[in-house]
Length: 142
Image (spheres, rainbow, N blue to C red):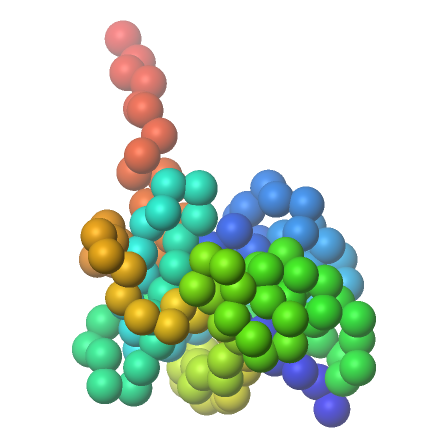
């Protein structure tokens, strides 16, 4: 039985991070999805607070990993978490309900913040990749 992982930041397939590349090589991308929550910008990475009562959505991707695959432990280490414990940055691995763009719903692991960061810079679009693209200087053609 596969284990699902919802990623919304540096592990998304558009990322150039080596751990994102490893995830792509060793897991199967199921597609895009979203989870109720708020996304925050920490400069080099985002963080999300998830909750079914939140009206905004965090956009990301869902990967299927094989049950017992050591890849999940590697992602835990990357996120600074051990199993379901909290990282030094306040991240913890939790179960979230993902709505896939295909209309299907599933439960997946993700890494969320225990509480809203203070001060936090919210990403109103819920999309870390779009946030990065908006930060890049645009070249003007003449």
